[in-house]
Image (cartoon, rainbow, N blue to C red; front, side, top):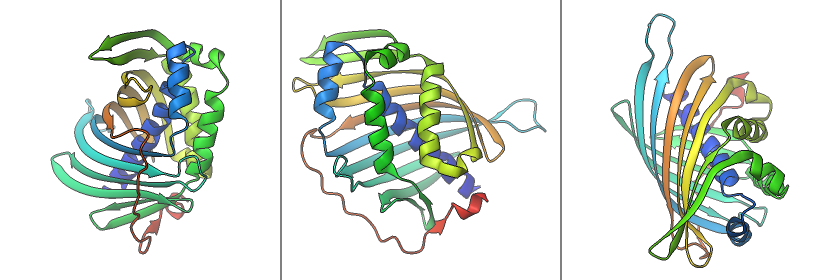
Length: 262
């Protein structure tokens, strides 16, 4: 069970990363400036709260079984644009009433997870995925216009707040492409259908994004386990534009999940 939930958590983080890269794009002049400014960032220090309701489907039950997950996460990234990405996140979770602590990080083409001594790793080229997100974002207004609707901007306390709702089917197609890049030949382990995406971004006077909230509803099947996930991610970016030092743990003792799927 812990291995299944570790895989689900990893996939949720992958989906949220791909959505975050996508949603900041829009043809509006404000967002063009914000994108140009934030695309130059080579590091990031972020605190996030993740709240999820996971509804698991079992043939022997008439109604799905619900599991709540709440997670507090500190995430750091460095050398984002330099081609030598270093990524680390420390997470405290409450999953189905059980408290867990996990550390995930990325190094030399592998994504690592240590969940209280249960250690897994999976090959993943995050550098290429980031470059793909950038190239997709540069396709300009046609793509963004097809993804965004109900877009609005307001000002509060000297900050600009962008609210949006995305075209779920268009976002679903985009995320599936990114997930195929992430999972490679093992993308068959997960089927996903995104039903709703909306959120808000807070932008400071220097055109840096200082916080973002994302709400998603998706149907997913992981290793033949069907589920519906309702997900809210609330994040704050600390000192945007400042360098971040990322210290990575040892890579010894991690089970390679690539072999687990075959």
